[in-house]
Length: 261
Ligand SMILES: [Zn+2]
Image (cartoon, rainbow, N blue to C red):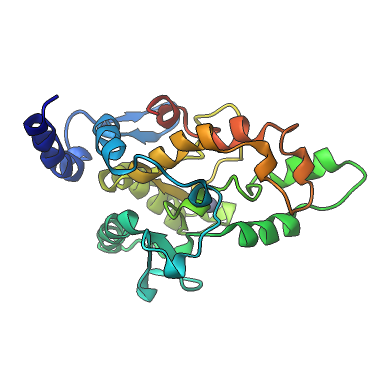
């Protein structure tokens, strides 16, 4: 592809992106009710040019978003709990999605966005209940929480929103909000990563959505750059290798997204 062709393709991407959710190439996977967007392939082209080499500190949540140029603070009106930070390329699409949902009476307020390694370690230790069987303790925690260094929240691309209580999604409000996300979030680049459409990994999380145009590149580079000796300083860290957390949890995402890597 020559330079001119590349420029045309890059110029088309925003158009494809903004229109993709409404065109005829989109489809619903009826087996999982998960929305699939055919623009994933165009996103790959854009990202390889934009994120050629991601430092592993970003992959592990070992940066300070307050003074890092790749991160931006999220305006407080979009945050439900505290001051939040996102990868700079994820904020504008999130705000566009938030405002579109708000027009339908749906609140996509952020419960949790960027989390660093230390915060994840605190969360992990609070869920990892020491017992006579550390493997059981770790597997129990891994139903819903990532080991430090393995969380997509380290990337600033992933957001917990709506409500993190399971029974919310059984209410009419929760069903309406989730249906809206399945049908509309891909138009803005956001996808549910922990769907029913997997065979390993965390339990399903209907509140956790990922800005795939950036997260896809983080995940691809994670495989090459991160090894098990990175995971230290938290309860049960010695089990990360045995429990295969990279293959089964970091890569335990929606199978359609996994195939698009
Ligand atoms: Zn999450």
